[in-house]
Length: 233
Image (cartoon, rainbow, N blue to C red; front, side, top):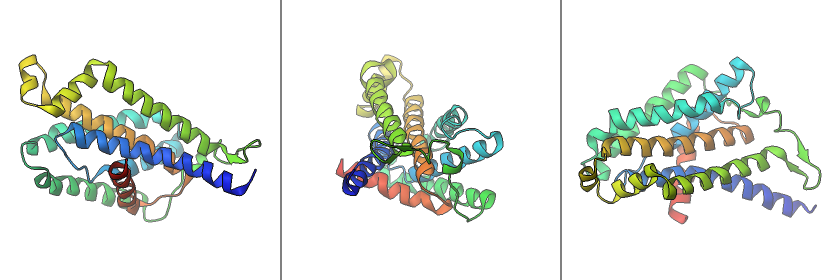
């Protein structure tokens, strides 16, 4: 197959993962009163490092580590929104950024202390990462990342349009005070929305970690990419 076609396919696969990061950021921005989660990239990085730790300790595939890392990132996002960010929910969006920025700095420096500045990679623990599809001459890791990203996007769409929690998230994003009339706890809905966005970001971070190396400074890079997807998309 022509190298240009291979490069294009790889770009599409990587783009789907970046789209997953952007989807998580968009979900938080729209669902939590226009909150710009500047810690989004660092949460993705936290998931990648947590997956690296689990894979290293248990000798499991990074995708298998999602059984542990997924719930961890979800509850991490839920707790910081419910316990900290909700206290500033009635402020204008710029007034919430310093606290969120503080969380991102805490994550970055904690990872730096625990894992050091040297780049890490999940590719060594992903047994499929070095396999190639002979028909396409494409690394299997790219195709798997593409499939997982699309599947999560579809599941997010179904969640937001066909379930109670999705309807509650959409209603709360429109008027978080009015939904209280119907017995909806908007603070928990905001926390759940932030947790879902963090989970999407975390999975995206793990998938990127199987394709490329990363270090504690990559949080800003992930955020910039997710923000670009949010603006362009």
